[in-house]
Length: 312
Image (cartoon, rainbow, N blue to C red; front, side, top):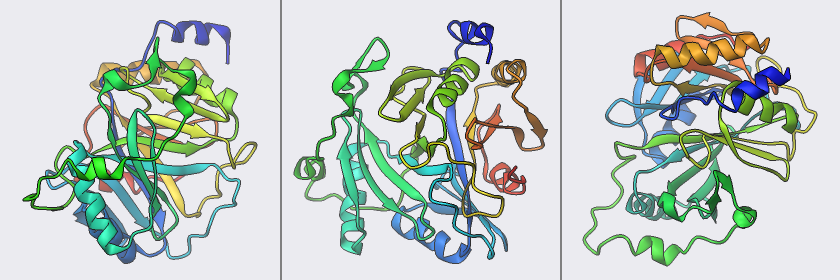
């Protein structure tokens, strides 16, 4: 990457109002995986055919899409791809309701208070990592000048009694993922931290809030991170072969066509291929993780269509 591209990135930032769309996965058992996301996460099945499924919120916002491949195989342990997808609930009581619900179901969870957000971790039946979280108020985040402070990597346990204490004695309980639930961030496995930082900062135009301990966190508009990357198990690894289980692509939703064109121009100027498709513009990060760029919010129909994209 040339210095001119890096210099331009210092003044050219990605759309601060971007959102993340759906995360698309290849799965072996479509029925079982659909049931998991509806039963344990409370997502709604928005669209379905013999080989594809779109899951999201009741108001029609897609979050996870599934493409059935009965012959899909597990990727090598050091392959790049998905570390976890991270679904954010609107409020702490929403997270508390969900926690009570899945505890009664016996779902085994990891957990951490990251000081920016409270998060619970688990895997779906196909081995895809999932994070469910809620943000702390932004003024509490351990940020200084747009960067995580030195102690931001410190993890502490979630205060479960305090979290559950946000519910009243007459609370109606979990009724499924509420409207306003969103794909808060996606966390990927990368092969090269230096190249990954250059891609997300100097080309796409994200702000890098954290780059240490084999992890690079990229965010827009002051958010703690929209895209996380780590090389903890994948440093020097390659993208999983075509036909593997796991990540197909994730979606970045930009505010308008002007923003999409600006990002496309930066990618092209950096010599990174961008492919025009009916579903949006497709590119890859340096680790081979596929990104779909779109100038509109995803719908059930558009999310279903993206599942026909061939993973490169």
